Amino acid sequence: MKRVIISGGGTGGHIFPAVAIADELKRQFPEVEILFVGAEGKMEMEKVPQAGYKIIGLPIAGLQRKLTLKNLALPFKIIKSIVLARKIVKQFQPQVVIGVGGYASGPTLKAASMLGIPTLVQEQNSFAGKTNMLLAKKARTLCVAYEGMEKFFPKEKIVMTGNPVRLEVTQIEGKKQEALAFYGLDASRPTLLVIGGSLGARTLNEALIAGIEKLQGAGIQVLWQCGKLYYEELTNRLKGKDLTGIHLTQFISRMDLAYALADVIISRAGAISVSELCLIKKPAILVPSPNVAEDHQTHNAMALVTKQAAVLVKDVDARTMLIDEAIQLMNNKELQVTLAGNIAHLGRPAATKDIVNEITKIG
Image (cartoon, rainbow, N blue to C red; front, side, top):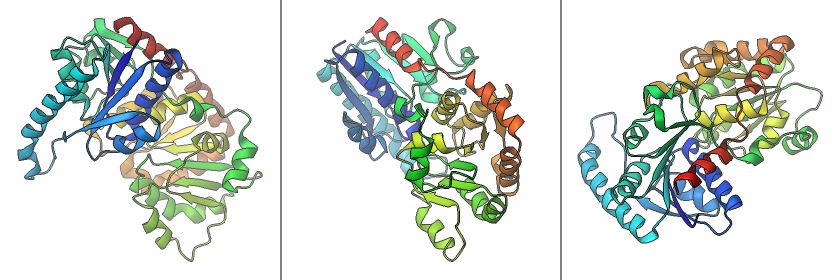
């Protein structure tokens, strides 16, 4: 394996698995050259270089749901991106091109297919994205994380691998004391971890604001990741309130310590969050985001809920029900044990290695 292109991004849910695949490729093939292809102005243009990899941006964008002049420029951006992607692929000469979903993966994998270079698609969600469904027709292999994906993809190309997650995030054994010191929380009180994804989640934030006193009254402390979009607004709204036992942060850099600390976790149901929860084996309440394509977070959540491996609270109900559900679960040790036991069966710790094995087969 000499050269590999990895393409996609837009959100942490696409970027983090892409970086995990790159890291595993580097571990197995130290001499491999890896080039990322992303979308200009998107999160990957910052996060990928931070992880130590080179990235080139394409001028690709998505279709805006509301009527806007930006949509008129979309066909030109797609054509320009395919031309540029073709040039990048020709110059870099990879043995294989990997798509992880997101705008940039479309033109990049299309260009690779046109040039006869084998492609692999990694689909994180239980409901396949439109870009990946189009790319699947020409891809050699489709690595998936959920059962029943033949609804979207050719059955003979599907390989069940699970999602690649960052190893350092899920290694939590023996870290609770370090975590308590790091976050300045109390060892004698149960901890609720609230994570709204890399950008935060307004619904979760509103539910927490409304329920702070209830949580404090129940003796529960909270590690609350609110997202950088909301941090300033929330600090202003919480001025003058008693925030004993409430640790508010815009971003969690040491996710391993946050997971080690948590007794119960409230989370959105992005594919990578769900995969991490399966590996850390903690009881979770999932609140799927309604603002994602094809409502795929609800599909992700239901894959756990139907196996009694997580609790579901709908976004529309979260402001009124979420804190009561959290307190109820915090007080129900029996249910915590059941949820943790069931979610543990769904973890795939070898997912990243299995994906790299599939890459080596076609590259």
